[in-house]
Image 1: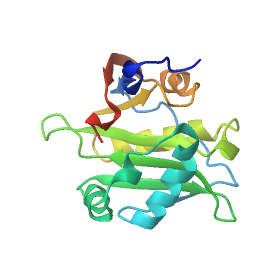
Image 2 (image 1 turned 30 degrees about the vertical axis):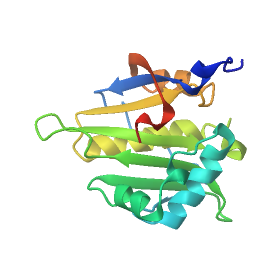
Image 3 (image 1 turned 120 degrees about the vertical axis):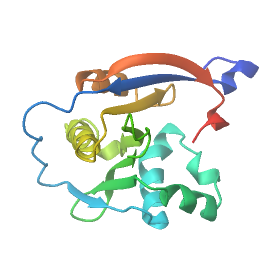
Length: 180
């Protein structure tokens, strides 16, 4: 459905999820036609992936930042950027992790951005990418992984996170510019 009218339409509903359990069993097999690369701190690669995945959902927060402001975010300790591509180099998916989200006493990671390009949806690749992101976070020492969705995200994201073992922690509303 639509987002409703009036001035309140600028507020976005956020659903926060968390898990303290790594994925069970062995890692999911990597699809043969999906290639993963780490692109930490590479702003051009990051922006290309952010646009490919987020464009259809109206993602804009990172696009409104100056080059230096975005570089500062990508250069933070524990910031990890994973990009999935096909053999031709087309972006299929994108994960931005904050592996330093918690405190030394309660190490946590946040999946800051996560998604698939439209052409990659419906093939089970989101499950692989989410599994990989979770294992990356727990392998890096996180005791807990959190993420949020908002009302602009893909309709199936909510179910995918629950299926991956996340629990719904809380639901809030905020102006889209209140966080990054």
